Image (cartoon, rainbow, N blue to C red; front, side):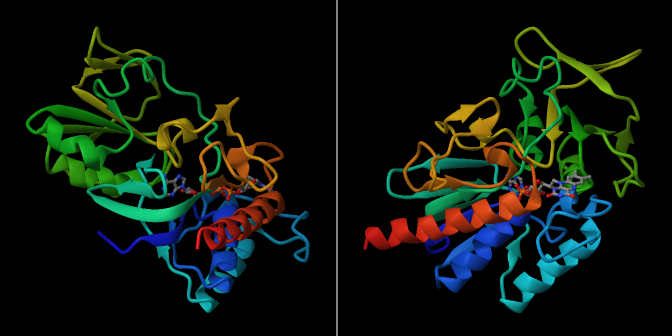
Length: 286
Ligand SMILES: Cc1cc2nc3c(=O)[nH]c(=O)nc-3n(C[C@H](O)[C@H](O)[C@H](O)COP(=O)(O)OP(=O)(O)OC[C@H]3O[C@@H](n4cnc5c(N)ncnc54)[C@H](O)[C@@H]3O)c2cc1C
């Protein structure tokens, strides 16, 4: 177990990065979870015209500026996915694969997931459906598992899982070349429904189906209510006050996950407010 952090930030988009630079300036001990690619939503933007100070910049170039900024401030991104967070009273425990981190405050800056859950996904969650393949794969030793991967990062998880299960199917929800172990069977079809009476039995496609004991759905971000049990969420967005505090004391949220408009500068501004208010909260507890 690492030493307890002052602030744990989940997400490396503009909201999380802005929170991190402000936490750094205020000399707090923080950890920033995400990816060194920052956010596919930064990379994908063809041209950005509404980020003050950067007229007609491409998303790719804006991302480079963000990366230079945090590099220059010595901020490192911990390239791990937070699977769940538990509010323990005066601190938070973050579950990250087989590790646990502790922090006195939390900033959720995990973005917004647009894709709807698959039919059967919510009903069979915890009964064969899961969002962290590496956490649950040991349960399926000698069995068949399926990974529905929404981003390239899911491929790493698939390669690891393929060493534990007897058979692994990979269903990519994006078009690319796949860097997967040879024993993984790729299915290039859109999943329609996860079926099974009490536990997962099959994954169905338009004209075909496969028998599987587990279906892991690996998206860029999971629904906030699943990430932090007890978090107040309305219409898919995390409820926050003017200080970006959620219904859980010491837990803040910023960026797309708090609601529309979905924009870079709004996200960065909220990340800043969340970090400064987390600092104020930490100082009040001294
Ligand atoms: C094609 C496109 C063009 C756009 N153009 C513009 C534009 O011109 N102007 C504008 O203002 N906005 C634009 N946007 C919107 C903008 O991208 C978003 O509003 C902004 O990226 C939101 O920032 P964020 O920090 O809230 O979340 P995101 O950028 O979505 O970042 C969230 C990050 O958190 C990470 N994450 C999530 N869950 C976890 C977890 N459990 N553990 C670890 N990491 C996690 C994700 O991997 C991701 O990297 C565009 C979006 C798209 C898709």
